Image 1 (cartoon, one colour):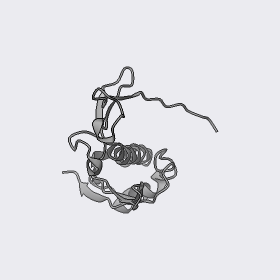
Image 2 (cartoon, one colour; image 1 turned 180 degrees about the horizontal axis):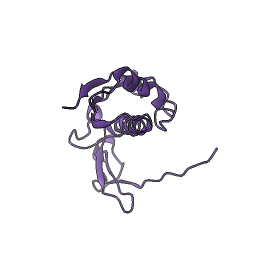
Image 3 (cartoon, one colour; image 1 turned 45 degrees about the vertical axis):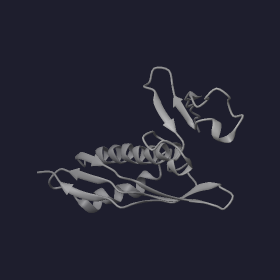
Image 4 (cartoon, one colour; image 1 turned 180 degrees about the vertical axis):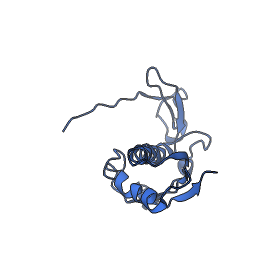
Length: 156
């Protein structure tokens, strides 16, 4: 097994002058400022008072899961000789919060809309999704079930 390192720089931007002296006295905002990459401005989940216009950790996790699945799907499709000309996903993650405030994801469903070349065998295309979970770093790392409900369109 080969190990890989991944890094990011997370910088809290929510100090309003008194740090965390008072629970409501600081903002739950931060930036992801990884050198050489665009800054991502983030906030807490809106359910916890965060800014709904900014990405939150839950957004980023479901986006990472969807993107990893997409990239492996495209790789496997290319290897299988399947021509994909479009791919969009609106993934849905379901979470829960217990009475003490601890939260977790219960499950996620990827809902890709995939456009393939005329003559594609849609059963073969659909079978690739199950194989993605053998490779996708993110899907293999989360502790909740990930399902998919793909829809297909034949390119014209």
